[in-house]
Amino acid sequence: MNISHIEHIGIAVKSIEESIKYYEEVLGLKCYSVEEVADQKVKTAFFQVGDTKIELLESTSPDGPIGKFIEKKGEGMHHIAFAVPNTTEALETAAEKGVQLVDKVSRAGAEGLHIGFLHPRSTHGVLTELCSK
Image: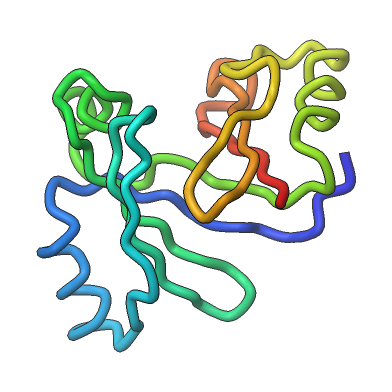
């Protein structure tokens, strides 16, 4: 699969604005981007921490994936994302190895990335995202 690094860690939050305050005022990080991904019913905010990013995820609709996640589990870590050269090829490789996919092919994500998810039932309980530029 050729993972190069952890691209980001996704954290589900009820309020991007309130959460940004914590990351900036308490942790001393700087939010460099806020973006809405309409087809995923989510608003995102990004912080750079070394080579890795923190992605805050706020649902824009109660029936979106983040809204459902927060309803069921509350705020907290949602997923870990790994950088790969080609998301669709990485998804195909995972499927060939028996991993259950959320996405069979890559789709558009925040920051212009191509993304695809592996189901937590096949990844020891961790929703795993694969990303490429």
